[in-house]
Image (cartoon, rainbow, N blue to C red; front, side, top):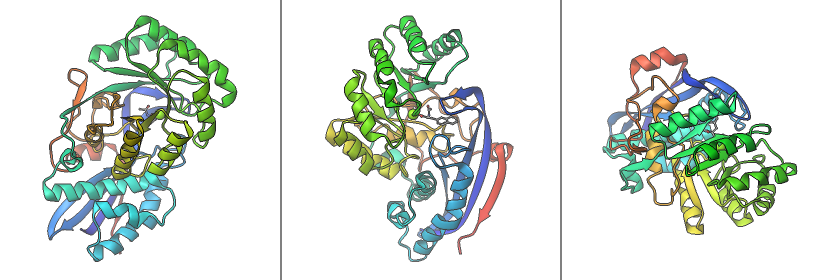
Length: 375
Ligand code: NPQ
Ligand code: MG
């Protein structure tokens, strides 16, 4: 593949309802998109990628403007140099970008755009590329921290009415045992799990153990990103299965977490781990180790939501993902909206990772457009 041109856009897309986690309240999603114009075997093709990084480095150390900068300065020049020698395919992106330390969300966005272009040129869907044969995947929903337990119960009831097959409650100190108890009492049989986004420390072990009585599927990332050993210790102190999100950034860190007993379950977010290809390797490592995985989310637009659904069609994804309908977050998506029917999302069959985004949606939400021509 030969890269001719790249357009980096920063979008600000309003959320249908504020999303509060232990680290922030957001009323809009700031998202960086990567549009790659390339030639594959002489044929012009466009590929799109979306960056998982938030506007601020509060979920992880990356942020959208930093990702745009590192793509322009350090990542794209490496791919452009390789593309002149025709070495460039989606499968070589990981190795070509290996000399740059970290910046996995930036790398993931660029790899996604290249992979999208490559698959569109070949007329191949992402599911076919992965060898996925399932045509639908079960849909779960992540429910933010609310102002009251009444508001939480109303939100959960609404999502269950829409058909979501699993509820994830965001928790933080001061919003944990009582909200979880209220939801469990209102819905004794619902598949329920919690996500703390690293808001606790091991000192809270006795308190977190109180969640064991609610028959939760898992507790996600209670401790800090770097605290693998402490997660293992907490896992031994609790009956609720331990799930890692932020701590798992690669297949290597997944293997470490599994070996340490820090993860009985892994949340796989393609953006967090450097892209869909590394996400598949984590799936493979976990599956070989008897560790369940599910597909997490970063409030993806239509540029990445369908690719997540395809990934979640792999056989090791045995728990419902945070792959909700577009309407869970956005009144207007960049593509045809993803919908949930009978609690599941269709695995896309179109070529590539995503549909072409709608030009008027891009125009409506863009706050910055940067044209980058590789040297
Ligand atoms: C998680 N996602 O599993 C993340 C966290 C996250 C769906 O729970 C704006 C504000 C964007 C908060 C993207 C879900 C966000 C955000 C992701 C939180 O930890
Ligand atoms: Mg999480």
